[in-house]
Length: 295
Image (cartoon, rainbow, N blue to C red; front, top):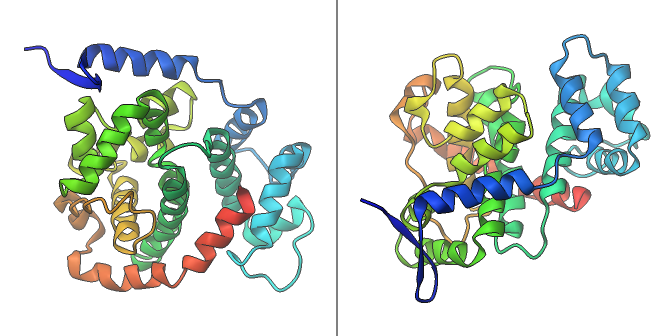
């Protein structure tokens, strides 16, 4: 049986055609700027040194300025000015600068101030990135790629809002009036969801699989392979913690359930979330400082 989505008053579109349209639109999106593609290559190369990273970022004035603004913002709260990218790498650490530069570059590339969801998305994305660090500390592991994956986990929503603007307004209205999760409202309205689109987009951009897979599976933890389930679970929980903290909740969307597979993987239950939510709420000023620095 063919299923249809509502497109505009009096018309409908076959869901398969909608998927084809999304796929075509993604193909037609501009490729990532050359500087970002080089950054992705550097990040995936184990031989990359701090000097290599500093040289590349310093070459791009816009990226360099944004990174230094973040480093000197209340997000980190350093007493002395961080004056150069090399200094930022020393102070923040090599891995942190890699994560920051990639996440900032991609979100800024996709930034659309006219978007219905952009303001909420910024706050939720940055909040999730912080939440991933809080969760990693709770389970005593290095955060690794999870803060960046958390920062980008909802990037598919920007594409949906751009390609199906009228329909996405209907999704947001359903979320607001029918006590629905954003994911369920997307599936009912469009036949696919933002995680699907995030997977398609990040694959087109040739982002590292370690980054793509948590974005693709953050609502399907039980479907994730055992080698990625830890990172997927952290991004999944970061999303929930951020919703519970009230950061960018997309017009009061119903909070997604904390999936059993994630609870087992992280050894965290519903009751354990309270302190993490409180910790994130205490960091709201940092979230706002980060957003102000990179926009």
